Amino acid sequence: MIRPAEPADAPQIAAIWNHAIRETTITFNPVEKPDDEVAALTAHDCLVWAKDDRILGFARYFPFRGGEGYRFTVEHTIMLHTEAHGKGIGRALMEALFEQAKQAGKHSMFAGCSAENAGAVQFHTRLGFQTVATLPEVGFKFGRWIDLVLMQKSL
Picture 1 (tube, rainbow, N blue to C red):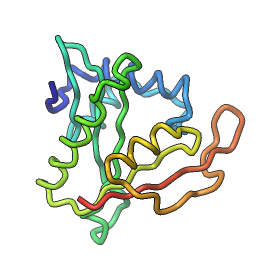
Picture 2 (picture 1 turned 90 degrees about the horizontal axis):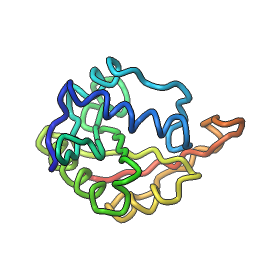
Picture 3 (picture 1 turned 135 degrees about the horizontal axis):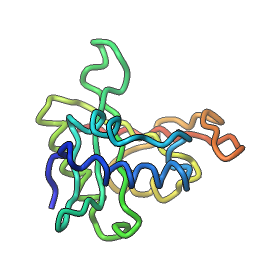
Picture 4 (picture 1 turned 45 degrees about the vertical axis):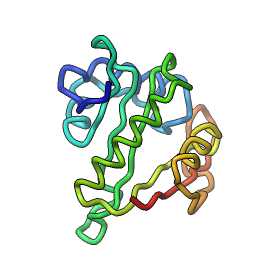
């Protein structure tokens, strides 16, 4: 079931996020997020997929850049528990996030995908995102430089 994130969800969201930080290059951030930071980051415009009080994924959007001229453009994060992959949970979360962003008057949404994560690029392409740029060697993790693929979807 998809619902807005609640403060009590922070430890489970942090567990999903921190697994990705520790084990993957889907995020270039090498520093794990404490529960209180996750609670603050997910307090607004964040949805979770919950089943029997267990969070299997989350999606959130946030400003793309600062400044009034960018107010209609957002970026998003989506992460799933490893058990949730391939079950349609990611698509359902994103479709609900698109609707939430449209209702808030947003015009376009960006995805920043690690070039090493071909699955994320394919996922976003299936959702209607188009690649608009590849930024070479802007991420650094696990001792290597990683390209960032920027994708955009008009809402």
